Length: 384
Image (cartoon, rainbow, N blue to C red; front, side):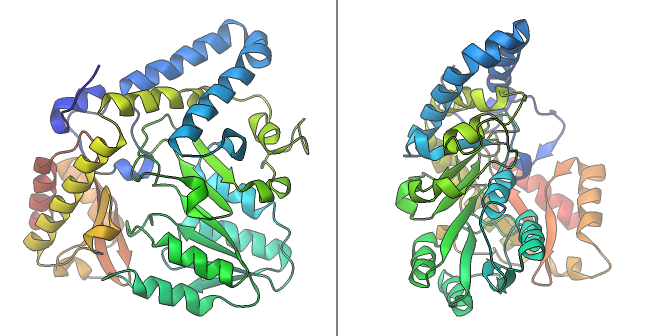
């Protein structure tokens, strides 16, 4: 299968329900049929002889899959480990570091809630202090982000956690100056890149962070349960898998590769996801379509609703947050109520959230998406 077309014409390549207007690829992704077939192939091989597979087949297959993913990320395979999701990667780092009472962990108001809760947990156990930078929204450019983060950096800042692309607001963060500022303050940097693989070209070593975790099940369209953690070689000795098993202190790669008996098929099928991306024309072709569609759809919705998009085009990728019409600002009308109505009455799947006191819709543009679906959203919101 090779294609250069996008939109509704290729939607049958995914097993998505035909009657659903699926504008929420960003939450959990969607695996194509070919990738799911590849995953099932690995499961079948495993169950045909579990002992042979785990002891003789898996080690080499896992290294091959990791090498293929590492090449896509411009990284060395030895610096990469598979994890189940980006939250697992964040937890592995936070729960490995030796925080002392008074050490500060800097997050911000756009931080993903699961990461915020992990910071709270680690702080409660270690005496570290969570510090939150308040980043305004909507944004006109990167400067307010730089100012907000820089203002909260201090002598006690031990770790700065930055989203590459924020989950609630779909904002591409200005990583380079933020990481420079954190390093100048003597802090290490963990990047939560949950949405970046498959949405942005990545060169992990060049980013300059100490730790980077990302999902493959979202914009790379790998199966659920496929993600990675990259750690700078100088930091690897101090990072351990969440599950301690036979290979504790046998090296970063060995610890994460074997955490006990589990289904490794999602990790192994990442090669099929990368093949699928190539068959669609490669990352550049896919993101040229999805970024343009997200920008055009966001502009259309904001104009129709008389509102605004949450940030400038150069700080957005395949997602965008658009403020809902003013009548949706009524506090008695919760985000969940709006989502429930869109689903029950229109079969539209999209996240609605309140941020900075206003209601926002976060649209996703996947290779199978097309403008007509956003027109359906516009009509449904107009009827509310």
